[in-house]
Image (cartoon, rainbow, N blue to C red; front, side, top):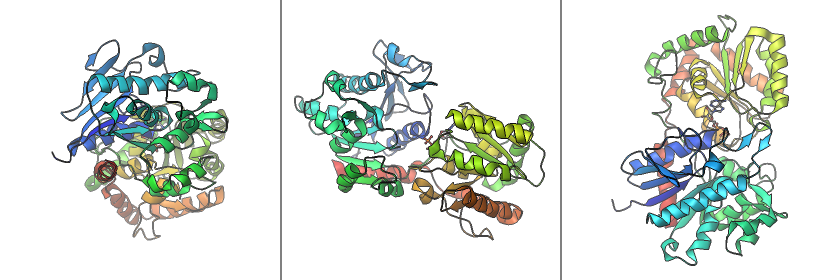
Length: 463
Ligand code: ADP
């Protein structure tokens, strides 16, 4: 194919091999969608514990997904054969800089040795943000890398990869990279990648605008303003084969847009399994999330006593201790109206998407958000605070159910959340109108088809 490109794609997590959040979903799905378009894609990630590649040696493993897409697992057992990906419950691994700079460097070695002359080096978030700096360093001495271009994608600006400046020497990068990486007396890998890449994108146009401002810029707003001409926004998709209520083997009963009445059996079964209250007129409100400030869990906790008067709530996720404690207290007070499961559990998350009537996502900031797209797909209507990717994907319902696919509020506080919740509650009382919205949400297309085309266009504009 004439327009076919070779793409080296770097990510610290890739579904289904390792996942802590949305980055893994993206890195598992976008390369496949690009492969379908005819591009040849190699995805580089660490060989974490319990991954079993089709082929394995001392330095790397590989799993061929199809003729165009292959996963290369970089092996270093001391670095990657651990219980967690990035941190223990009490904090980050102290050697994360070493672990992820090794991932980038060893990937380059693989690329050089195997003659994979990629047109595009696509790095994601701080863990692989060293890629554009390495390419700059290597290309000076080695023509093999001379024509390659780099794209850096920001999935979440809150994580920037900051380390002591004196560690620069251990990285073996070209001397001018130090100034590119330096920010307020530290190494800042996201800042480095923003400056050193040929193009930068983030995962929605709204977030691309927001991060150039003081409120959302996490101290990088001036750098982001500087790189504005090469900054793009592309909304993610979800893999419609991975997330499909009509084939999902984890849920109690399969259903589809045309048999949406079967969804209720998932609700009944989950309520029974979790021992929640039998409330004929109440909604089941779901949340699958990291329990952090970013996700607005503090605001949701304030609103919960009111919500729990009439509805059941199930929350899956773990995070900051203060939120675990506050939720435990609510559980004590409200008993079997609420269940909280502090785990990472893919199977249970699917049951929750399938069982919920409403899915709450009051995120303070949300670069794109995948959970709202998954909840559309499973017919759970999202209730969101309008920002970032949520603003671009969730459209507020009219009171009669005409137009819209969820419930949106504009100011992040308990009262606004509750008045938005009241609108959802009122619509839920009118089953015909409610189900017309559910069907509309389930019928929308948030697959990778459109998003992959936008990446294809962006790559082509770079070479
Ligand atoms: P983020 O990447 O910021 O955590 P996203 O909405 O982009 O948020 O993606 C979150 C992804 O992680 C979704 O696929 C969601 O279902 C999944 N997820 C989050 N928490 C859990 C959990 N505790 N158990 C299982 N899956 C989870």
